[in-house]
Amino acid sequence: MDPELVQAALDGDRRALARVFTRIERSTDDLRDIMRLVHPHTGGAYCVGVTGPPGAGKSTIVGGLAREARAEGRAVGILAVDPTSPFSGGAVLGDRVRMQRHYLDPGVFIRSMATRGVQGGLSRVTGAAVRLLDAVGKDLVFVETVGVGQTELDVMQVADTVVVAMVPEAGDSVQAMKAGLMEIADVFVVNKADRDGAGQLASAIRGMLSLDQSSDDPPPPIVLTQANRDKGIPELYRAIWDRRESLDGDQSTRRRDRVRNEFSNAVAERLSAAMARLLSGDGIVAKTARMVESGELDPNSAAADIIADGTLFAELRRALSSGSDARPPIDEESH
Ligand SMILES: Nc1nc2c(ncn2[C@@H]2O[C@H](COP(=O)(O)OP(=O)(O)OP(=O)(O)O)[C@@H](O)[C@H]2O)c(=O)[nH]1
Ligand SMILES: [Mg+2]
Figure (spheres, rainbow, N blue to C red):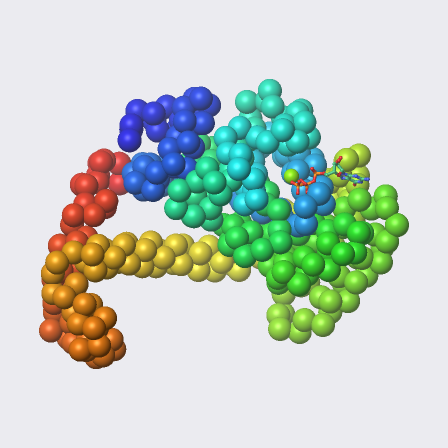
């Protein structure tokens, strides 16, 4: 890992930033080291997730919202996260076309990420990518992800506000509702409002929302758009900022839950990697595992015993200090 490269990115060098992205995608060790340097510079950005069925107009919507933000002089980052695509790097071809008007604007940084290009979990890397864009001074970071499965729901957890885009073609939208998108939406968009059935879809969403009595918060607004003609985009942009203001306290609860989760997942992953090393080693834990395998010991009492007598912790400590986190922090000074 190269601290000068990270510094260059923090100082506004876009090519350095692109290279830092590649590092956080390719290596979990680099991700950790880079985040250590980046963290002190974070805290200013508002992260807006945009999800919905394939072809709903998400990229067109994000492109339009980016234009609104640029008109206000806000710096913008766009992450296109596609769990189904093998492409990582710049932006995928379709998005390049739809976001053309932003490509030459130094105030906009666009990056696409795909499961296959990424080590260590798409949602974790997305979280790091958002913080990186925050640290380089982006005011608004959009995360676009196509929504049909669990990965997209996980990816959306990085967002402060989630926009769910639906289109009048009923099949996809019903699918999206089933997939859990209703629950995570802070703002609904009914895009392609030029098509038949847009009003009905909005009523159907309103109907579903009115069934949910579990919250005292105002229900998510529903905005009709024709994103390819920029219609409704200014209204959507307003709704997104209003949401931030009206949910200020709630937002910080969400952020707190999110970072607490991230922390606890990070600890659990390291422990489980160390445990895997122990099992394939030749210490007492490995011997105990073999006795469990042969039926000599019962798994539960064997686990309780190696915890109670301290064996597990002694071996874990050794395994953790020889693992990939064993390197000393690269730059303690920056904290
Ligand atoms: N008729 C109509 N077409 C639209 C509208 N908004 C976007 N489109 C078109 O719909 C197509 C898909 O738009 P995208 O923005 O690529 O949709 P997406 O949700 O990002 O697609 P994926 O990322 O592939 O899931 C494009 O051809 C757009 O021009 C709209 O309001 N009305
Ligand atoms: Mg798209």
